[in-house]
Amino acid sequence: MYRFGLVPDKFGDEDPPRHNFKPSSTGSFLKLWRRRPGQLNMLKLGRMGFQALLSLSRPMPGLITFAIHDEYFQGTENTAKFLEFSDELYEMFKPVSGEISHKKEWDSKTVVIEPIKVGNKTVNAEAHIAVRPTKGLPGIFWVNYFGPTFVDFYTRAKLEAAPCYNKKRFADGGYRVLTGPSPLDYAKPETKKMEQDLIEHLGPDTFFDKTLPDRTLRSPFPLPQNVAASATETSPSRSTMSQSLRSCPECGESKTVETSRDSVNSLIGFKCSTCGARWMVHSSLL
Image 1 (tube, one colour):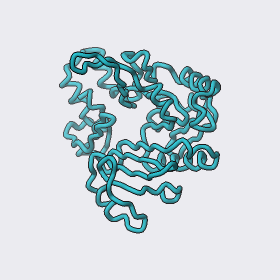
Image 2 (spheres, rainbow, N blue to C red):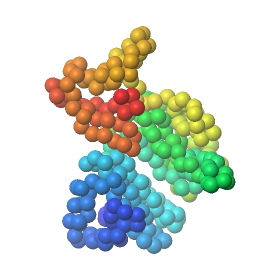
Image 3 (cartoon, helix red, strand yellow):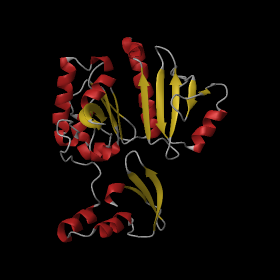
């Protein structure tokens, strides 16, 4: 962040954060990081400021949210710099997926208006759809990061052939796909067409659509093959499926140890105590 000119004024686990950030002395910041609060909040004040929220439910962030003012992207130099910064975040944290968008674009695709009761009155209120990559992506935006899990899901050939403004392949096999030169172009007809073409190319049933909130999406995290087969043939009980999901996919050992729990994406990590293999399971299946 310091190298890209994104140095916060304040940090803390509250909102707004209260601790002063000093680039020359980061001891208190690192102490808070090691303590792993529910969130770590970083804030820079002013028209060119930003806010970063990190979910620290495990040693590395489970979710990173970075918000920066429109004015920052008025120049192409800053836009290119922020894109480079985001690419480095991808390579550092190896996310399953990620995106960069204008807030108005994000809201238009993930916020719905629902009636709620307030006393004796019914009023309309915003409902924000939670991002759950294990159930499908929230949409196509200015920048779209596909980690190796999603590359395997869509296939590398399909991503290589995907219609877009620009794309980049990372060392881990993941991709970054752009729909236009700037996040400020989200309302332009050519950007909208690019987004729709990309969704049609990858498959509409892999993306959330707020006009079809109950639609079943194809998941990039399918059941292990042996569990899927037994579910089709014998309709096992939930406890039987749970035991199979906890069993090591490498050696079959059932004496496994839970290693992590990501509440954001509802994933639980396991490690085999016999062969050392590691795998993730969606908690809703257990």
